Length: 158
Image (cartoon, rainbow, N blue to C red):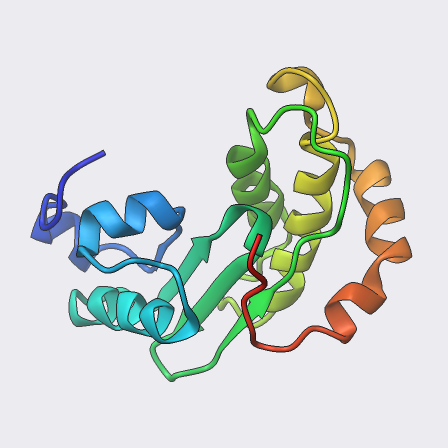
């Protein structure tokens, strides 16, 4: 992972979305991802580089999103028994990409789907064997929509 300021300007100018985790964003921006105001500050750092959409994954605290127009929020986790976090982030990004519209108009819904996928992944051992099927994700998503519908833009401390 590059240090702060370590991403080439040419790459940033051709990036529509950035999806660091909380540790990676700190390395890139020098700003902790420990509260909502700092998440906004992190997002603004990326917007200043021309990136239009920011997602910061926060582990047990969920994930934060913000676009250059100021729309933002927190997508909470779905509680599950954590066995192995290997592949959780990759599953999140891959699952989200399978649902995301080209114009990113359904970002929050895509993140909810990705959260359901990751909640399954962390409940299993290993990397590739832990990645769920679409049908498994849809079942978990259906059972947990109230988690997302009742969510507020606040970080939960774990």
